[in-house]
Length: 204
Image 1: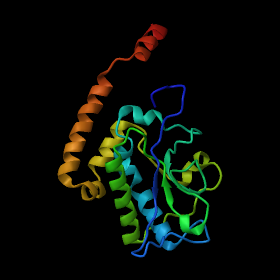
Image 2 (image 1 turned 90 degrees about the vertical axis):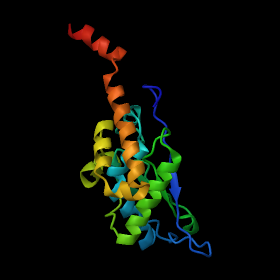
Image 3 (image 1 turned 90 degrees about the horizontal axis):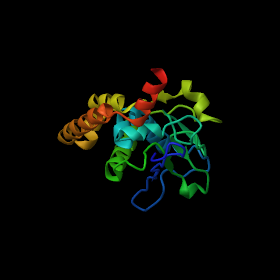
Image 4 (image 1 turned 180 degrees about the horizontal axis):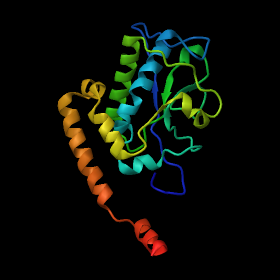
């Protein structure tokens, strides 16, 4: 989100699952998809909060998440719904897939894709149920969804306790990644901005 008055930029990742013959295993006349699709959604929902540091890796990343902004703010899913984090687009059954909408344009695409695929695999392996899809305004349905860490610091701490991320990215990599992000967060938090100075003047 480089400009405060404009919406931030997302990095949507589109995921489908094909067998050896190239047949889409998510394909169904019902947009809600096959059991495999719903299990994949369940895995992505269940791992999203602890993975947010990968999808939103910088302090500025969290300014993008605002209600009514088309940037999702909770682990939620819906059919052709742009107010949720996991959208199932309508269209021909053969095109059925998941649109993963939480990552920002500042995310590392390799790490984001790796974590998305690991979440899909986790959901399918464990047969996770995503619950019912969100209908209507997803921002108004937060009570039914899993809230995400609202700040960079909280996202770092959630990632630090994540066995899922350690498995998906490797313990050694995660340890180094967390050390870098903690140092960056400390430097970011220590910066005195023009807004701070403006508030001082108003409160003095």
